[in-house]
Image 1 (tube, helix red, strand yellow):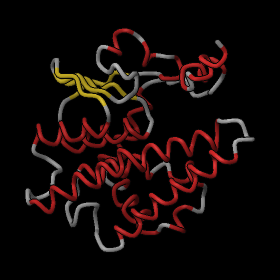
Image 2 (cartoon, rainbow, N blue to C red):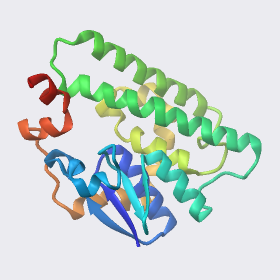
Image 3 (cartoon, rainbow, N blue to C red):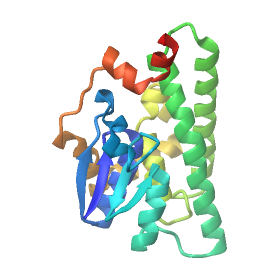
Image 4 (cartoon, rainbow, N blue to C red):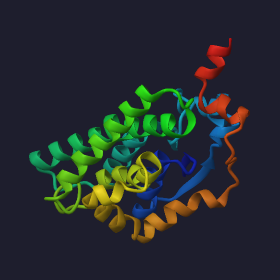
Length: 228
């Protein structure tokens, strides 16, 4: 049976949504990143990059949420658009936009907004600007398209949903008033029964929630390097 290494963060939630939508049988394996589970030897065999999510599909290891989405979509034949050159181009373009843009910039925006020292205005402003810019691109695109790839609900919408759920934490409470088309698609996906089940998966386990010194050492490893 497929093993799904996860926690409740945005990237694992993308994969959780696919698994719940597709009906693939899987076993949950919690990885508590605030306790350093992601750096244990047994997990690094699954993902040498030491991040969640990852899957073990009967000995086939896949890591990075977007790679997992494509692997599972191709394995099952589900949640891919009609196989035309235009749709394939849109699928890969928007999936990579989320993988290399929206996700990383949102992650850095969160770090400098909530966790970094407060005197780093340059970094904070840069990542807030880039996160806003990416949401603006999404909002403009969704003004003319129900889903990320025309009228088909695909893995790109799942990837979008993983991060769009966190937009207020990234950019503040005004984000959805500024990007109503993002909010419209987010609400549609979030209302799906599979999305509700995916969000609830984390409640099956007790994950550490406080970001104390121990957790900061695991989440922000550059602090240990600097101290050394």
